[in-house]
Amino acid sequence: SHFKDVVELESTVDDEVDNVEIIDLHTHLLPSEHSDKFLTGIDELLNYHYLVSEYIMSSEMKVSEFMNLTKERKTEVIWNELFIRMTPVSEATRGVVNVLKGLGMAKEWKERDLNGIRSKFLALRASGDDAYEESIFSLSKIKYAVMTNIPFSKEEMKHFKEGTTFSKRYRTALRVDPLLEGDWGKVKLAMAEDGIKGSGIPAVKKWVKTWCSKISPEYLMASTPKNFTYESVDMTQPGAFATNVSGAGKKRKIEQDDDCCEDAGEQASRINESSDLLKEVLLPLAEELQLPLALKIGCDRQVNPTLGLAGDGIVTVDMSILLRLLQDWPKVKFLVTFLSLENQHSACVLKGKFRNLHIYGCWWYVNQGSLIERITRMRLEMLGTNFTFQHSDCRVLEQLLYKWKHSREALKLVLRGEIRKVWENGGCNRADVRKVVERITGGSYEEFLKMRL
Ligand code: REL
Ligand code: ZN
Image (cartoon, rainbow, N blue to C red):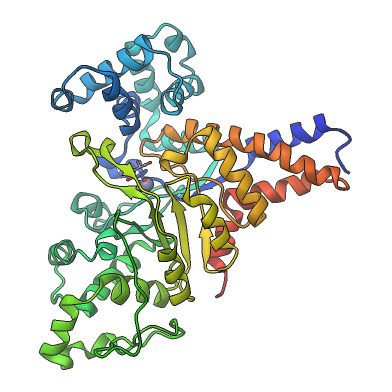
């Protein structure tokens, strides 16, 4: 039956948002079985690069001196500065406090008792890392989280090579930034380490395919560099490649068949060496393997390299780049998120024109309550429920607790207002609310993955 009043409507919205099992479609989490790559506990939480940057901005300590401290010492100075000398009002500092509360450390927080917190975390892990890991997923009500798996990272890939099994709460994604950047050096090095002979396009394709069949990724992914650009390929230009990929965009050159390289000899390898890894490898493979290409657009890497991970900035990008990709590659699915607030509106317009685009998340510098609200409301107004409202980008396991708490809070505020408009139009009920909530927290994403283009 329809809601009888606004009070009932709002409490139903809150309840549905609080209890929906979410798909977290981009994180940097890795499973406990990947031992050294599994980040958990208070030291990792306080060493998060968002907090490092907040700390450094007000501290008088030399950056190099800070960077040379041990992890435990960094924890202490960040704690003293951001949580004792100052009040934790930022998203990232409030997050830590939320985790402490969520894990039964309200008393320790009240007393600012870092040692007490350290021993409580140890006690929580006493029943084993996998049990603890599972408890965090279930407390945060996350169905599964997609990882970022980097075939260029030897240390990470050794776990996959060894075939280590891990919890079903994690799904894989193959992160291949050097292919997007055209970084042949990195590609060749990684291939050599994996014992792949040859260095032309077919060899690179074979290498990527081998990783795909090894880890079965949900999608291929990359974050674009600041000066990223993509020009449509003109079919009429000489030196075109021959293709075996069907349904390519009308302007695309025909590419070489995978197997013809050996016969093509010297000329082919010359072409291969200079050719574009994005156009000749990444996009054709995404099409052939029917794997979406996830793009994170708008980061200006290392504007202050002394800060390490905390040193990345932001750029507003020219949306015509994505437009050309969508036009040229109608058979490739693009999962896209933007770092800049300025790009969010045009992204919605573009989504309204291209079925092969799915917009997701409020990434990093727009992962703030006020901005999540604003962006989510706009997406609902412009796209209905054809988007995914958030991803967490967690690096530390316990961040799932606070990042999703904050995002759920923002979503509730938005939906109370938006659902009310529907209700005032002639009524609505819990099932209507549930449909909206489930779609924008993972339902639309899974539908997009299955969709036939
Ligand atoms: O996946 C990415 O490229 C980014 O999310 C990361 O580079 C970034 O450092 C991340 O921690 C931001 O939330
Ligand atoms: Zn990320």
